[in-house]
Image (tube, rainbow, N blue to C red):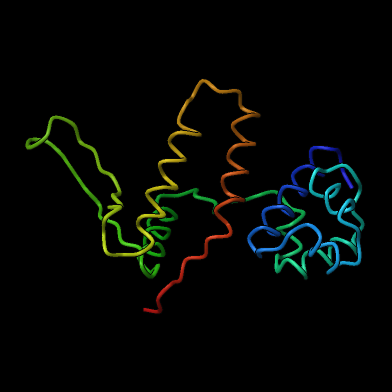
Amino acid sequence: MENNNTLIAIGEKIRIARKAKGMNQKQLGDAIGKSIRAVQMYEKGETDLNITLLESLSSVLDINLADLVGKSKSENLVALSDVIEFLINLSKVKNLHFEVDVKKPPMDEEWECSIVFKGKDPAENNTDMCLALETFKNELGTAHEDAVMQINKENRLIDYYKRFNLITSKK
């Protein structure tokens, strides 16, 4: 494996996936034929993980092996069309509703637009979205933080919210 930071990141993903499955460390250890101490060491990034073990973990935890060992990634938003495509896909998510609010002169002093998720909207996922965005604002909204700390927070936040699946409607 790579350096200790990589092991720690993988360990965090193992822990998150284990908890998302509702398993304790002993249950995970039993499922992969390892002791509870071994699972603790994996989750803390204290030991190397071979490919066979990683495959077992990904299978038991129902997580893609590439997601387990790879860096967290987001969609590449390079062009404005990528953002519009993202919004179109977001509009297809079942039980999630958003509005686009546009304010521009002469009615308003500034020209601005925003995407609004109303937490009390009947769409069931709106409350979760509002909580996630509130966390995002509180955790990541300070521009003066160290860049490395920022990346770690982003990865933790993304990994945490991976366990919440949205159901997309077919249009």
